[in-house]
Amino acid sequence: MSDDVNESLNVQFRPDPVKSPWSATPAAGPTGKIVGAYTKNDHLTEYYDRVVPTNFASSTDDLLMRSLIINYALEGKTDGAPNQHFYLTKNGIQSISREIVGTHFGWTGAKRDDYV
Image 1: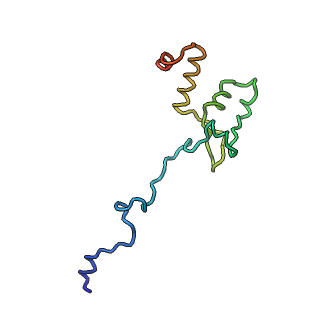
Image 2: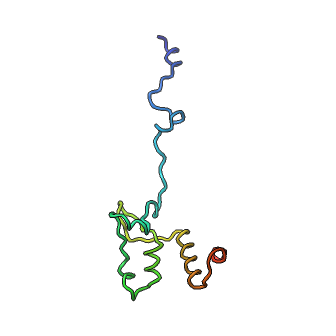
Image 3: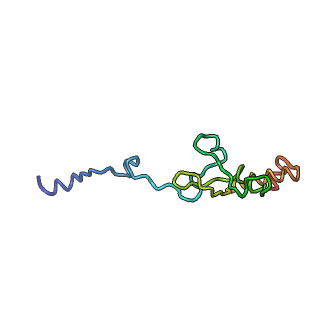
């Protein structure tokens, strides 16, 4: 066989990611402090139990912070374990705002949502 014939065959042994994307190396996922963070509903599993930091744990401490941590915050992870670093997302802040406006102003529905 001549070299011209071998070059015209253009045999490839590795999959072409354009023709078969399922065989391509997966793209890197999102990264950040709250990617995969624990939510308040994760306490329903046997693998996660949210622990409020000791400086907000008793009823004489800052009740607002304790409520935010228990009800709205996401807890970060370090090596797959909770790390007691709590974060509020935009959705969490909007939920807090709706609750406060409803509780203190007595507004509900569209009036509350328009204000927030």
